[in-house]
Figure: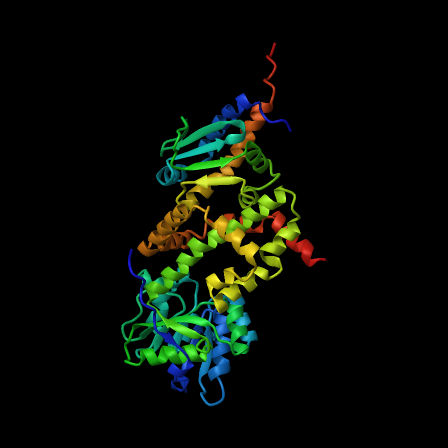
Length: 138
Length: 336
């Protein structure tokens, strides 16, 4: 399965965040916003950073910053392997392929709540981006 | 820098008189990782012979009850066992104790003793034992299997003990008798408060344990990625038993002397590399962890996890249960 071109990867991530937003309940969104209002996702192998900003009303994409308080760093392939079931995030974590900096471990529950919607949303966003545009109806 | 805290008092068999347990009923409340070995140890020590006492089990779940019955114990519901007890050993999981305590406490008889094997619930004010009972701490520092085996071998095991509330005036004698009968005083027990016990326990679990685990995982994955044989790496790290022998040697000969006993190449290489580790960062993280344990923030998170039905557990179980290369390598070795 070919990955989206690097330029499209950021757009795929942004779409992923929009899709996550549709999968969280208002209560979940508020919990996430309280526990971790921003999560910066970094993919150094493709030189991509994206910040997820959570408020009680919505999740949205924010500009990445240099010293983000909470950072999750991994290779793009790690995310894609997990999203498509080739290798779980747990196995990637054990293998040292996911680096988490700045998370309050006592708020792990809020982060875990995000994991399944995130993988599912990335998969959907990826497949959307890989699909050719529909032919115009004549 | 604060001066080191003074050594706690160390108790051994000579300090205890297990005969004061004669005729008493000891209830093991919770027949799990700790309940089973302590129940068996106590029954062996005082169930027959010169100090006849009765050991019963209180259990609230069928698998534990079945295990206790198979071991030959009389098994009662938790509160019924508490009502019969002269000494009730609270051996339910830490986070479960606050919910179970009101019903158990209401059935304890004045003058009886309630014994905690962990200081957690007491230290964070999560339980309120009735005022008329002795409140004791007897906290083994070993896993259940080792407790039982080391008692059978006659080696004993380390424990912490203490008196949190002395309603009868005899609480110290009672906890020492219990520790002796439970098999630990052949090795020794240090006197601790509940708060000291739980902070020590959680701090080493959460500050030291993860660094050790992370170092092991990193060494394995860096080595395998560089082409070293996975099985060889696991042998070096723990499978051969060399590492556990090293820890045993630290306990026997001393931490620093043990570092010199593997030859000059090992101490030269190990010491020079240790100098490059960022201990400032490590210390900073450990101080933050200690702060959260001491303040009760960790206890609050654990209670929240329990009250919400353990939402983190599936994720943590999945991390551990994943078919990682380490687990595969171990399986392949065992099949050889």
